[in-house]
Length: 94
Image (cartoon, rainbow, N blue to C red; front, top):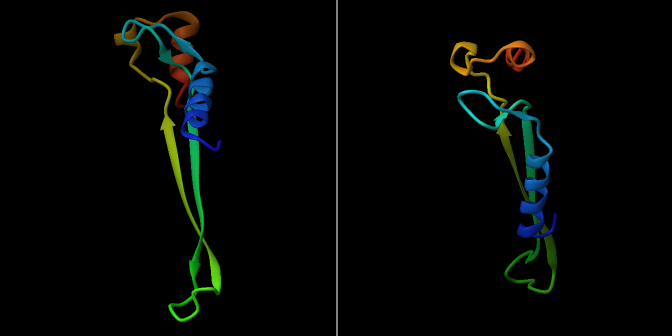
């Protein structure tokens, strides 16, 4: 992505593709883990020294962010999950 708008669009698109399911605790409980990684890169040109302002060298900085959302693993007693939903909850974090 090259803009904040594109980054947000990709995040929302990924969120929309996640599996969710209703429980007593949450109407749209996430049933899958998600990791969204953002890598920021900054490229610039800086003078190599004060004496040689025309002799420029490229500078590069990078930062990486990992946004992690783990699937819900609420206790079955609190969610009142039964059948397939109960098995799903048991297997989420195994």
